[in-house]
Every structure is written in structure tokens, then in C-alpha cells.
Image (cartoon, rainbow, N blue to C red; front, side):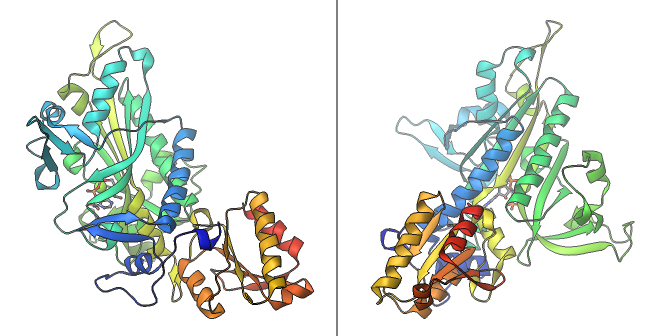
Length: 428
Ligand code: ATP
Ligand code: MG
């Protein structure tokens, strides 16, 4: 992408009203723009990050055999009356009437739609287990939307719903998603800590929240350092569960058995939540399936959420410096940026163009910053935006030397044209 063809709009100063660093940086980098209270438009740069996160989630969910669907944002109130949640859900639910006077809602979550969908197609135990998921917009009329997309009213969630024959099957689905979540957060460059949680409005028996550590987090986290040392590819669910983790009121300092030198305390942002709730919804909504004995039974269910739009802010909270955002490689809006540092020199510009074409041709997600601006302000824009790797093409390019700068460490190395190509292609 050429920056001249890409909408990009950065701000030098911190915008008024933004309190936390991720909100400030998202506005300054031109990732989002506020539309109304707690609701945002995702600008091209922000959308790229959102889509990179989505891609990782999709890959990891498909890997464990989940099937992606896309459910609507509006839902009929009748399904919520059927599940028994319509009256109880409260002020967070946006209730709408259509032109025929029918009651609709803008979905804050999709257990009802998913159960209704499954009930239309699943008639026999042979069709189970199944896990459906989607990435879709939710609306919750939060009492206090704040911190930008960290707590919005309309926000993007990955939500999933599992259906199983029995409790053992449901716990197996739960555990599969649990590990899938740990992998997703790790691929995003985050360390997420799962903590036992209350089940709240979703209801049910077993639940974990996934938190990532950041000072602005709304929960206080406590966990045994042993958690930092586990290898999620080679550990059982029970072993992970045995390692002490807790949030807020679940932690009792006087009863905690973790020795003080092993107990880590931090603030956490909730980025994911998994629930097992048995036949709560299948039963209420009369979703029965024929078992192997010919008798009907209600499938065992779980539901699983990741705050996709919140994650963008959470990643920035976890990864920034005084110059701006520092994207983990996997979600950088572009993989590399080529910065021409001498626009008035046609030969230098030509080398930058050639490099750009080579990288594009090799499938590298590359941005070319060929703006005729002061080079200092181009550098500070690119540091603010936080693209993982910067390639500077200046006068030394005439003698065959380009500069590669690592955004995170600030480390610079001088490389030849071919070495730069090799390194960038290696990252793609
Ligand atoms: P919170 O406690 O932060 O209000 P929640 O427990 O109500 O969240 P869940 O129903 O568990 O939320 O939703 C699944 C995920 O969706 C959460 O883990 C969170 O990452 C994300 N999420 C929930 N509410 C919001 C919001 N208002 N803005 C952005 N993301 C949200
Ligand atoms: Mg939650």
C-alpha cells in the first residue's frame, strides 16, 4: 500500500477526553473515530489490526474443529422470552420495535440464536458434538462506557457455542476452547491468565475469565508464578487448573496457600470468558435430540467469548513506549514500512519504489511512506503508528546501503537491498 492511496491521519497532541494510553494512541494514530457515546468507526489503520486479530482467532478456532457462522445483530424478543432472559437482562439490552410493533433487541450475546439455530438442524446424537462460532458486533448499553474501545457500547466479539451429548463431552469441548484461547492470546503476543469466574448473566456451573495484565485493568489479579512457566502445548487442563489463579473477591489473602515470593499481583483486563452451563438453554428452549437409546435428551452446552475490539486496546496497553504503539509482529497493521528519507532525490525515490515493488511481489504486507514531508515528522508518525519494522531509504541507498529499524528495540542495522528483501520476506 502506498501511503498516498491510504487514508492515514495522525495527531501530534493527545486528544481531549481520552484518559488511558491506548485510547489516546488509537486516536492519535488515526485508528478509530468516535461516532456517539461508546460507539466508534474503525478507520483503515485500526481495521487492519482488527482483521489481523480476527484471522488468528479464525485459524485457531478452525484448528480445534469449530465451525464459523455469522449471526444477525438484531434478534426477536420472542427467543429471549423462551429462554427466560428477556425480563431479567436489564438496562444493558437495547430493545427496539419494528414497524409492525414486533419487539426486537440488538444482541448483547447470542446463546438464544445459537440454540435456536442448532435446534433447527440437530435431531440426533450422531450430529454431536458441534461448536459454532462467529465474529460479530454486540451492543450493550453499558452504564459507563469509557476508555475508547476498551469498554464500548457497540463492540466486536468472537462468540462460540458448543453442543454435546453428555457432561463429559461438554467438558471436553470447554477444555479444547480453553487451550485454543491460550494459544490465540499467545499468538497475539499477550500473556493471558485464566481465572475461575462467576457465571453472571449467562448462568451455569463452570467458568473462566482470561485476563491480560495492564495497569488500567478493572480487576485485581493474583496468581502463582508457576503459571508463567507452563508450556500450554504439553500440559493438561487439570494441571493448569491446579496452578493458583484468582481475580478480585475470589482471592482470600488469609487463606491463600501460595508462598508470598511466588504470588504475583497485577491489574487485569478481561479479554475472554468461557462458560459451561449444562442444559440451561437447551432445556428452556426445548431443544431435544434423540439419544443412542432412542430417548430424547437436552444437549449440554457451553459458550465462549473473546473481546476482539477490546483486544486492540489491551494489546496497546501491554505494548507501547513514549513514542507510540509497539505492535507485536502478528498484528502490526503492516508488516514493514519503507520510509523515503530523501524525497527530493529522484534516485533515492526510485530505489524506494523498486524495493516496494519487490516486496509487494513477494507477498509482503508493506506500506510505502513516500510523502513529501519533513523526514523527522515521517519518523515520528511511523513510531506513533508502531509498525514492527521500518526500512529507511536515504542518501546511503545510492551507495547500496539501507537501514532496518526495529520499532521495539530501536536497534538499527545497515543492510544491502537484497538483504532487506530477504529479511522482509522472511517476516511475511
Ligand atoms: P466486563 O466484565 O468487562 O463488562 P463481561 O463479563 O460483561 O465483560 P462477557 O459477557 O464475558 O463480558 O463477554 C465476553 C467478552 O467480551 C469479555 O471477556 C470482554 O473481553 C468483551 N466485552 C464485554 N463487554 C465489552 C464492552 N462493553 N466493550 C468491549 N468489550 C467487551
Ligand atoms: Mg465476562
